[in-house]
Amino acid sequence: MDFTFSEEQQAAAEAARGVFAGVAPDAVPSPALTPGAVAETYDRALWATLADADLLSLLLDTRYGGAGLDAVALCLVLRESARVLARVPLLESSAAAAAVQAYGGEEAKADLLARAGRGETVLTVAAHGRTGHDPAEQAVTSRQDDGAWVLDGVQTAVPWAHDADVILVPAHTGTGRTVLALVPRGHEGTVLAEQFSTSGERLGELRLESARLAARDVIDADGAWEWLRDLLATGTCALALGLGERVLRMTGDYTGKREQFGFPIATFQAVAVQAADRYIDLRAMEATLWQAAWRIASRAPGPLPATGDVAVAKIWASEGVRRVVQTAQHLHGGFGADVDYPLHRYHAWAKHLELSLGPASAHEEALGDLLAAHPLS
Image (cartoon, rainbow, N blue to C red):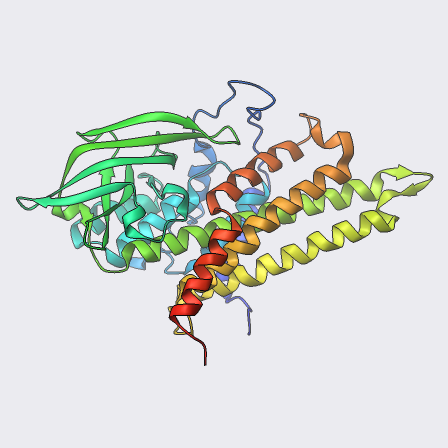
């Protein structure tokens, strides 16, 4: 399969490299090392720079000021952002805006999309770990009442919840369908509490108590949540890939300079083999990522739904990013635990991404169910 990127996709990646070139890796102290340490908000200066570079509107149509690109372009930019641990809601806001564009009503599009593309409105998604497939497992319920929608329930670990202007909340209807509710921050009937990730990021527990929304603020199109869920998962795989590539480069630089017995430790077979194994992990993560992103972008038919390709990408990303950072810590020795060296931050972010993706065994089970339901000829 030809994974050559288009000129537009390559231009987006090049613009991202230019923006992130001068960004220092996230330096928020890890909670395990500095109890009580937490990031207060996202990097607003970087967010403004991304907006100026038109990188917040990649997936939007030109009528909303966007570039009209696809999931592959977004993943290329996310890959670059993860290399510097960029603290911005790029994935969530871009994916949410794309879902509104693809499935939302005209009023919602007019209200949100152009402002989201300019970075003036920040969107996020209460994806409940980004792993749920069964609508009955969604933590929020919805019902219609006199032309409006009423939501009840709790969503945990909502990224950027305290900074986003609008939170997309998946809610099941009790009939096997899932709708997406556009819930403004501070909306009547909502309570937002603080939670914290393993990397010290400030998350939110969103509690909905008979929160009432107009019909215009609820996306009830078939397939909307499934498409958004797959895009979020694939974008998270892109973040894992970019982080892993940067960590392996750091490891190569360190082992090439660190000497034992008069030789760089990179020349020792035990070190070289471990690094080579992690390189293989990254190439597998990359191949499965682009397969999943291409399926989402093209909506191309296949022997399995795109969810199957996304499951394979998540298997490799969740396992691969963990192995890469663990090997990096091992090969760095005690230096890897130095809080003045950024490797501990990459390790904390990798753990957060791994937990967000969910265990590989769950994705293997989901893939098995898909294969059983769609037997290959």
